[in-house]
Length: 160
Image (cartoon, rainbow, N blue to C red):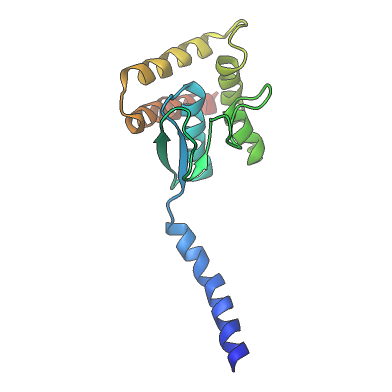
C-alpha cells in the first residue's frame, strides 16, 4: 500500500507539472544598460522562445540572482566570440526561421561588425532602436517600443 501511495504521488506530480509550467511566468534578467543586442535578444525570446517571458533589470555590474541572465558578461546567453547574444539564442534553440536568421545578420552587423561597412537597413534599424533606448527611461517601456520595431521588421522581411 505504501509503495502504491508513493508511486501515485510521483505519477500525479508528473501529470500536474505540465499544467503548472504552462501558467508559470518565466523571468529573464539583464542589466539596466540596455543596448541594441539586448532589445533584439529580448524580442527574440518573447516572440519565439517563451511567450510568457517577463524581464527584470539589475543595476549595471551587479550579479544577476534571479531568472535567466542574458546579455551580461557571466550569462550563458551573451555575446560569444564573433556572435551577438541574438545569434547565440538562434544557435542555442536551433532556430531555422530564415527571417530570424536574416535579422540575426543585421544584429551582427550592428553589434559585432560595426566598424565595417553597414547596410542601409542596419543603419536605419540601429538608429531607430538607439533612439528608443536614449529617449525611454523605463526599461520595460523601452523593450515594448523596440519589440514593435522588430515586429514590423520581421513582417516586412518575411514578405520579401
